[in-house]
Image 1 (tube, rainbow, N blue to C red):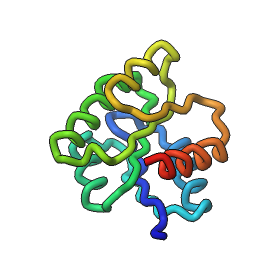
Image 2: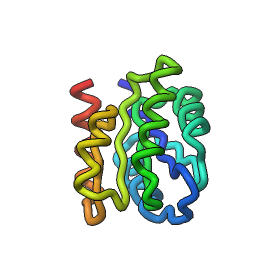
Image 3: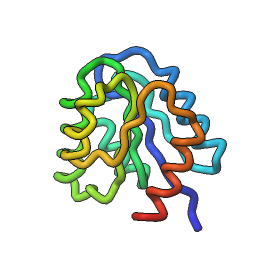
Length: 131
């Protein structure tokens, strides 16, 4: 079986990527193929990378407060590109009250600060098994 392919991305103007790098490394160490896009990616760039890399999953890290707009745009673009089979999860400074709104647009899971890396790894394995 091919390894799980994940694109980890930092959309928007947020310049803090330590958490994204920690998650990317944990996923890679768990045997997954991980592409980290770097800082300041547009939703269009993220979706293009996910399609080009044949990603199974996209992980978005948002600390800027623009999570509702950025996640919604990524989900919309995936749908427009017939790539809505790519699972999207995210993490960052996201208020609990906004999580159901993100789930409504199709985001599979949101991880908040303090989440253990192993919890993310286990969730990704379960998400791929369920998919």
